[in-house]
Image (cartoon, rainbow, N blue to C red; front, side, top):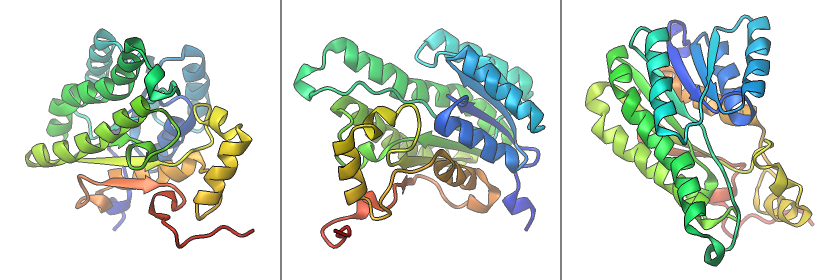
Length: 262
């Protein structure tokens, strides 16, 4: 029973792990005993987080990486392979950027910006990590998607399509790599209290609309997403693969039956 609910002896890579949801995921995985490598584009935030985790005696290392860069992704995986002796149990693809515009106002650079950062990075890192996940004998990939990839949301059409693509990628890899002992799932959060979502939550009109359509009546916290990610990586979740699970306070299942209190 203890082994089913433990990550002792397990290795993990978390991208974008120095802040927000990524930071909470690192803390959750470390709390279960995992040994983790974190990458982030911000050297300042990464160093602050590594110092914090060292004080907590978490086994976390880190490196700077812009995951939108093909060469930097390859360098990252060389680093991870060296640290973990060519084996990796968990890959958490946690990177997201948003430029919100009406669809008719997006230009080619907006499209390439979203695709390279949100989608191509996750796809390529999954490819690069495959031999290490396979070598571990028990691999798990978790893509941090969004409710915007499940239902229409006011986040911009390009952001939404990248997150929808991650959900489909999770399904495809679940089937293609099952023979290699690798599971693949996506987690789709609602608006979460992070720096990325704060501009939306600071909009009084949008916040009121969000709360009125969310049965639990609020935005989420990073730790509420991290707990699901950790569960999907545990041996206890060994029969779960190919799923997109929403952490959304009920927003995506709210049709016409739920009515907020006046």
